Image (cartoon, rainbow, N blue to C red; front, side):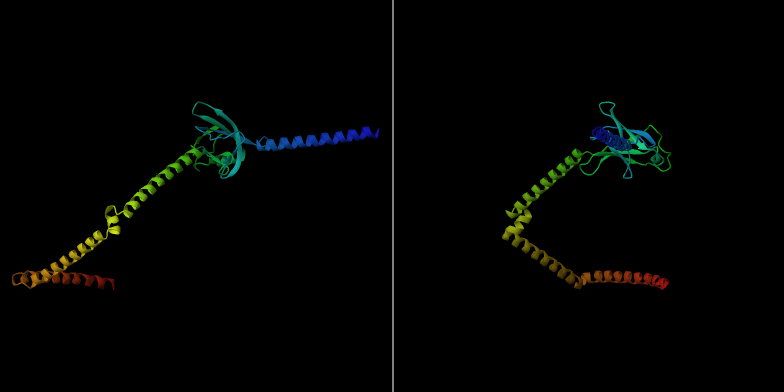
Amino acid sequence: MKTETGNRLRLGIFVTVAVAMFILVIYLVGGRQHMFSNTFHISGIFKDIAGLQVGNNVRFSGINIGTIDAVEIISDSTVRVDMILEKHTQKFIKADASASIGSEGLMGNKVINIVAGNPGCPPVKDGATVKTLIPVSIDQIMASLKTTADNAALITGDVAVVTGGMRTGQGAIGKLLVDSTFAKNLGQTMVNAKNATDGLNQNMEAAKENFLLKGYFKKKEKAAQKAKEEESEKNIPRQTDKN
């Protein structure tokens, strides 16, 4: 008799625990699927959902407000994604809101991010289809990085060729660095240019003392002096006004 009573007691405890666990699982799954809260539905049409799956989160301003309810292929180039969202967020999501696909971290699950839209627009309606933004895939990012790396390699190769040519004396800079004769000739050319400039200055001074040209240079000096005096007279009233 005692054994039979003990078995019934253990069976009752087992059934009670099983039912409690079943109710807990239903509550957790239902809460995730928003089965026990007021909800509304919106949809978006994407060309590429980038691995988005049913049950993934929908976010608004970084907060989870819903989940992906269904993913349906409409044509060979479009996919329809149905979202189930919490009812109290509907007033914040406007009719011109947009949806884009992102990810939870660098390699995390895919999510849909909702952008509210213009504050002056009315709230989005239940069952509406919002506009979508094309997501940037990892493949596109990697292709862009590869192009950048290839360009950097080409530039590095060109710099190496130019540097190698300079070391062997190719080009004007290479000859200047390596060929001492070229550098010496260039230095002598600079000296000759300086001497020619000094000689020109001496000739100009001699021309000023020449009887035939002396009057011309004096006239130029007087004109320059007169212009300087006129400029000084113009500046005097301006300084007075400022004071």
